[in-house]
Length: 176
Image (tube, rainbow, N blue to C red; front, top):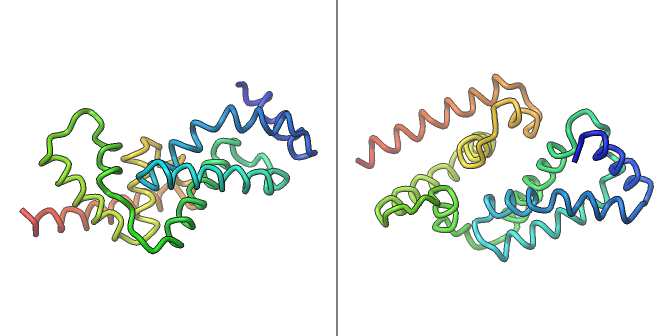
């Protein structure tokens, strides 16, 4: 869908056009679910986050100003919804599921264990560093895209990544 068509649908949805809103969600649901799954690590939680995201988007569609692409705005809502959801849960994320998503080229059991431990360490990093690492390395976003989502400068994202790598190197050195 072209950017102009998308902006037209957003404008119509903001005015209450249910069909336009439905088309927007249909067009972007794969992104919503994929991001939710990556953050949650399992299907039931990802489905809950995706559903919560759709509700939040319906309530907030009027606030989209067009300062960024609609998908960037939407991505940010999904990430924030996933973070809120995970914060509210008393149990921990299933890191085995995250490891399988990240290493889907058929990892060995040892690779999965190492990846599991690495993601545990990543999740223990400060929130902004953890988010930056997940978005850059697990989702393949550029530093520029991450900066828009985190609402910070691109250099700040680079610093988050640098600091996270430093901490991860220390963890690897101590665990070899």
